[in-house]
Amino acid sequence: MEPALWRQLDAVVTALQAVRGGQSGTAAMAAVEPGLRPGVQALLFQVLRNLGRAQALRKQLAPRNPPLRADALLCTALALAWSPEEAPYETFTLVNQAVEAAKRNPATQAQSAFLNACLRRFLRERDALVAATDDDPVARWNHPEWWITRLRKDHPQHWQQILHANNTHAPMALRVNVQKTTPAQYLLGFDAINFVASAVGEYGVVLERPVAVQQLPGFAQGHASVQDAAAQLAAPLLLQGLDLSKPLRVLDACAAPGGKTAHLLEYAGPASPLKVVALEIDAARTARIHETLERVGVQAQAQVLVADAGRPQDGWLEASGGGLFDAILLDAPCTASGIVRRHPDVRWLRRESDIEQLARQQHRLLDTLWPLLRPGGRLLYCTCSVFRAEGEVQAQAFLARNTDARLLQSPGHLIPGKTDEGGIVSENPTGDHDGFFYALLQKHAD
Image (cartoon, rainbow, N blue to C red):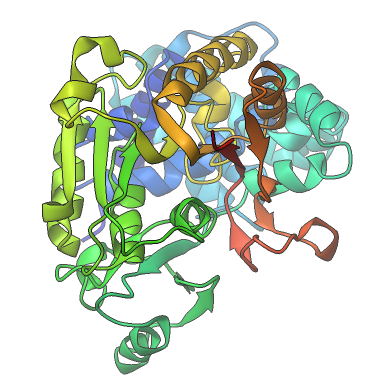
């Protein structure tokens, strides 16, 4: 039996307050009791995708800021009800249950009449109130104003496409393990259980509707892994053209949760003597790498270390066997601005100053890892960001200060959503994918 809507709304408000307080949506959802979690997550994600509009409407209805929890509840109701076509329940039901949630929680009981009055007025005057907020870019695009401004500067032809994509649901994409099956064979498995899916890129499958991984054919046996189509480009880009019959030494510098590490080894195949050193600074996230590698059956070819890739002086280089690497994958920490449709909290958690701070970290990692690459070797720099400071600008600055580097053919910035004809380059997957950046850098041979 589905939990009462007022209980779900109350839990959404708690999670929204946590996000507003700087906590990630993932952490906020972890605090929700398991029985409520599926419904609460769906509602919270919709609230976060419409929060700009909801906050603008709240200002129309209540120019003076209500107490924090009452404000969060009012914005939650408005985010869910502002567009009847997209509302998960009838708007009258949402309003009634939001008021019920206010009455049931001691923290909002005193504001229940105020909330009822605001929401009843919204139902009566919805069209006029929405029209009054249409000229507000934050309300229209549901992103912070600085984010919109930066996208317009970085992507003058595609900024609206990016913002629109960020407000949609991302598809569930899988990477098929070609050491165990093929995309065509894997799709037949979906046909047998009446799941609608289609191929994307060279290794990918996209489901029409997301499902729990336990329902995926052969998931426990490592036949497929959850990974966006854009992220599936990393392993082929780094390894294509290398002689995989030789004992290559590869570094995955920021490896958690292990999807790209696994793909590197799947791509090389079990007969290849290629070895991957996978680093992760967070011990808890390192456990996920081990789980991923064990599930797909490639753990014997990887060495997983808890270490900061930017500090080889701490001993991880010696622990990995020492010596230079033939190839390095640097999936650098970034704003995650390319995966907002999967993590709608990111837009509200980030500050514009984060871009400069993360760009400095990316700069440091590039400069630290480049000397660890053998002459003739290659480094793939990537971020799940659409901001040029974390992509094209970073790569060009690196090339300017490293005359022994050259840029090989690379996708550059991938625009989230369904890429139009003008945005496609030969390396891009077709169809729907996240925002990403790739630069493949080669060190000149001696």
